[in-house]
Image (cartoon, rainbow, N blue to C red; front, side, top):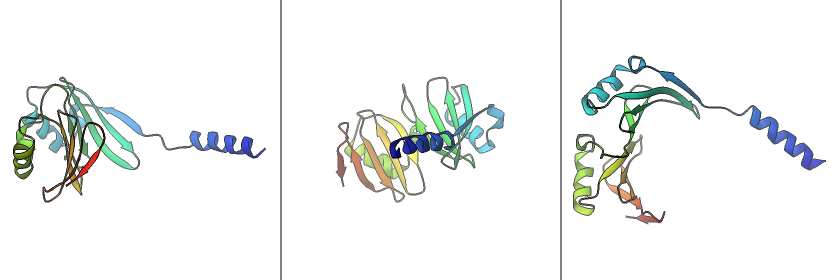
Amino acid sequence: MTLTFLCCYLIALQSFAYTPSDEPITFEDLPLTTQTFIQEQFAHMTVTRASYNTQDCLKCYEVHLSDNTTLRFDDMGNWCAIERVDSEVPTALIPERIQQTLNDRFAGIGIYKLEKDTNSIKVGLANKEELVFNTDFQLLDFEDDTSNVIEE
C-alpha cells in the first residue's frame, strides 16, 4: 500500500514538475548587445538557430552557429558560455591574465570552451582538461580527462 502511494505520488509530482521552455527566436529578437557580439566575434558565421530558454528560473539566450558553435548569453545579452567543436575560442575573448597562465602551463593546447559566471571562469581545453579561475584570474583547480580534480 505504501509503495503504491509512493509511486502515485512520484508520478503526480513528475507531471507537475517545472519544464524548461525553449522558445525559438530570430536573430533580430536577440538583445542588441548579443547581436553586436556575434557580428564582431563570429562575423564569418551564420546563425542557424536561436532560442530563449528558461531553466531553473534562469533566463538565457542560446545561439547556434553554422560551424556547430554554441553561444549562451544572459538575459541582458552578455555572453556567458562559448562552446566550439571545430575551432578554438577567439583569443580576443580570453582575459589576458588567463591567456598568460595558459601560455605558461598549457602551451599549444587549444581552447574550445569558455564559461563565465559571477564567481568563476571555466576554460575547456582540447585535451579535455577543464580549468577553473576565480574572478581575479587565478587558477583555482583543474579537472583532467579522467575526471580527477587537481587542486592548485
